[in-house]
Length: 334
Length: 286
Image (cartoon, rainbow over all chains, first blue to last red):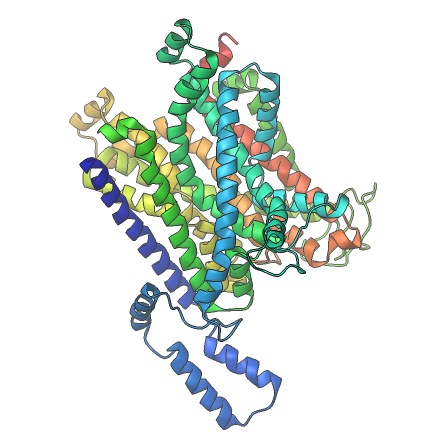
């Protein structure tokens, strides 16, 4: 138990380092930007009507104070962290004056929901099928599935999502291809709203699952086809243990541990996939928000979304790593 | 080297199929050197012509012959993938061999950074760079950035092999005969990790080309350089699907899928080659 605590502590330090490094990188990269939020708003206001130069100057000063745009970079950096800790990153530009963090928090549940469902589904189904394919190597259906998985797995998320849009939105329009829920449904805790969300999430989730399924299927099949040559499997088979029992409790059980680590390492990539998937399907999550923010030149919002992305991905990896000892008794005992 | 390739081609269906698919794309990309018009010119041929014997892949709404346009696109995409692969290989070989051979605090520090890089979401970071650099984000800069982000998985793999090599007899011999650490790493240990380097380099190309396509489709790269991603960007920009210019989208998608499957089959074949157990199973009994 004490070893487990040291393990958790070590991972916590690493989590802190990842979050610190990622967010610092995001801060410094965005502050190299030549776009000044102050000039941007002043320009937008001045374009709509003519104002006296004095009024514009006053506006510029007020905004400079609001964005603290005249401070040196290292002070900005320290201020940024002080405000990040309390969750206030300042007003966004594209939806001025809504706080950037509020926009992020509105988008976050959509992304987390979509990702969680897609990952759980693709990981479980992919590993089960992969395990069976590695064990029953002559099964025709599983062999065919392996070929299909090999063909689909290397294709980037964008292409898969795009093909789904073409098939289900253009050639055979049966599923909604855009938005998080139907326009005519009022958000709230009603059956109609929930069903509408589920209906709209089928295609985005499917595009993530299709690619993710292939990854875990191929990984598991490779692992299992090595494990089946181990002595303990041969022994169990010779001793007359039922083959289903051997597959699920001896073979897949052991291969699941490295697959979990693999999932933790692949999470950053899966998150990247979500961004583009959301963009293709117009899903109201973090990805769409990030793209909108970049196109609108909104430094604050870009920084807020990418910081949240770093925190979310790092914490998800942290949680998966904490599960590791529960699955692998060797880690627990040591 | 040639014996290895011959064996792979003879016993490994994946290798043969992969080489064929990648070969088709490479030849197609090389054809761009004989193109009748430079790729940045528009309205050189009648726009929106469907595929025919004159225009094999049709022409797009910008009046470009898609065959030559895509040929340029694949040349740029492939060289981009190679650039990223080379840059990230240099980093991962150095980090992996250093961590594996020197060990101790060096190993701990390098692997600490490695773990940080593994957990960073790459795509948002690339978008950040576009946000700052805008159209200054040319191909080489993007390749450099992605090379600096794409090494950690492979460095860890190389490290695990180098860790095993450190305790082998020949390493001890080299140390006692006064070889410097740098020489041991790059002359004695590097040949052992070369198969991994090749296999991961191809996997890395799949990764980087996929990200480039994704970025370019959003319009987040220099959209005037023809790549597979920017071709799709312009197609979406001209609403090719709505107008009915389906070949502008379908042909690049089919070609890029061919390239990805080919590269992936090559990695699978090389990974099998690295693992002697599965190689024996293939050549020997089954």
